Amino acid sequence: MNYNIAVIKGDGIGPEITDQALLALDATGTRFGHTFNYEFLLGGGAALDVHGIPLPDETIEKSRASDAVFLGAVGDPKWDGEPGANRPEMAILGLRAELGLFANLRPALIFEELADASPIRPDIISGSLDILIVRELNGGIYFGPKNTDALTDGKTGDGVLAALDLADGKGRWTGTTAYDVEIYSESEIRRIGKVAFEMARKRGGRLMSVDKANVLECSRLWRGIMEDMRAAEYPDIELDHMYVDNVTQQLIKNPKQFDVIVTSNMFGDIISDEASQITGSIGMLPSASLGEGSFGLYEPIHGSAPKYAGLDRANPIATILSAAMMLRYSFSLAAEADAIEGAVRKFLAAGYRTPDIMAAGFTEVGTAKAGELIASLV
Ligand code: IPM
Ligand code: MG
Image (cartoon, rainbow, N blue to C red):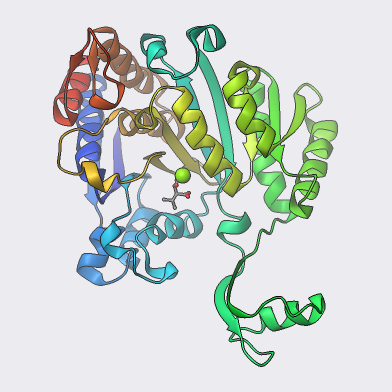
């Protein structure tokens, strides 16, 4: 088969890690008789350099027309001074919004071969860990109303602060004031809930919904809808709820209690980084961002790590595993995905380590060598 993949290498270590994933894809294509065609597109700081904007229309349109989008990482300190709407990160946020990618799957899996790279005591993880974080990706505080403004003489540019100030009656919002609104609707919660319940059904049958229902209205709505869904459609799933602050403790204390976790955009961003450290390195965790059909965007959960750019030190495994997720979820190529994941295992079992997971007695290799070895093991 032929597959057309929109590739956005992005910034920092983005290009070098993406190149390694494409090597693994090509090796898989050769072994299984598929052709992967790549259309290289600009996004993030790389697009700002050329077009002055992080997400050109061409990138959106060609991504939409592709079978799947593959992204390295975006973010470059050079553009830190840009207004929020023109930062490199808007490339990824804009693609998620434009392409309707509302379900972010972030598996936190410990490879047995890497159990000693985890900072958690071996008796706590006992050699393995397999958690799937399902993060809502199109809503919440990331995409709610937001602005930075000042209330001057009871007026602001957009009137929101003035209205709030009036309702509050305390005259609290003076000087420069910023707001980001956490907002969720029933339909948004139901559609991510469905993805999470279905995943739990395919896995261990347990779902932990993470919220802050002791404080937030959005969380109370979220919790109620999850309960509703379980009662109506998923009585076979064991559903529990946990406050997000407690989850950050439990992930360290007893991570094995979790199977599938479902949570909002912001909480999911935070706890997926924490979960990645349990597995040894943030350089190991892939992700899939899915919409309603099989179309998706695939990227490592980590950022562009500008200080490691071009040094041949970045771990390409999260990106290579993201390619495996693309084969599995967008192209339904399970054996091919297994082949890539198997190659990563063989690479680790053979004693190779990138600097982030290096330990005594292993062989340290750089980004390019790691990519070449993994591709050769597909
Ligand atoms: C992630 C990243 C992004 C996010 C940034 C780069 C916008 O941290 O994918 O986790 O916050 O979602
Ligand atoms: Mg993040």
